[in-house]
Image 1: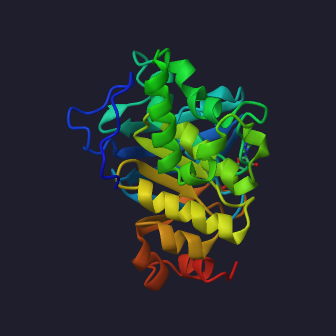
Image 2: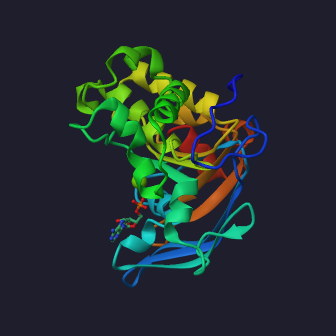
Length: 277
Ligand code: ADP
Ligand code: MG
């Protein structure tokens, strides 16, 4: 956790600037369909505040769909429908009286392929998400926010002298950390990461893992990964998703990461975490 409290900016912070802004995310009985095809069946999972939850399981079992449901991206897909509830610290993110942008701002997302705006400067990339929120800030405030977010993403030391260079000039691993910095600028309470290291080399991967560990006290993290060592290293709890033979995805088992790896209750979990399918 950072020692120095962040400078005040237009984005509201807790009264105590050191207080964690992490929220608990609670998915209840989530089912999802694309057209007539059901791809998730009554999936329930609590993702506790300030913890890292890893979603594991074979391709096609609905992990990305589940993640998109957690920040209301699923509903952007025309054929997609949904049942169930998602609560952030007890409040329904699908409550019709809440604006979709409010849910999005609280729940950031980082994707497999780093997607900074390539021609936009590193500086402006970090601030890009703020425009949506309508917040206006003066230059000093923006400078401080850019430094804070790049530092939290573990990129500040590498880019401090070249903030005006385009985001696309960075290496893949740096671009992914820039995307993390961009998602932090709106002060999310939850950060969703869909295979954030799949496109990166091992050194960049370890660097991102370090960033995840540093961030986890102040933002709740949910990460999809196919890398079992990574799940073991970064997460406090794991949920094992599976879609057997044309059936929709379910959570076979979830629990503390140690137990999932060393003493799983279901033999299918043991097979999966040991690379047997
Ligand atoms: P995972 O991330 O675990 O690999 P996904 O959530 O991407 O799984 O996919 C779950 C299932 O939903 C798969 O069968 C996939 O083909 C299907 N699916 C995903 N996205 C769409 C979409 N936009 N339209 C139709 N089917 C989709
Ligand atoms: Mg996926």
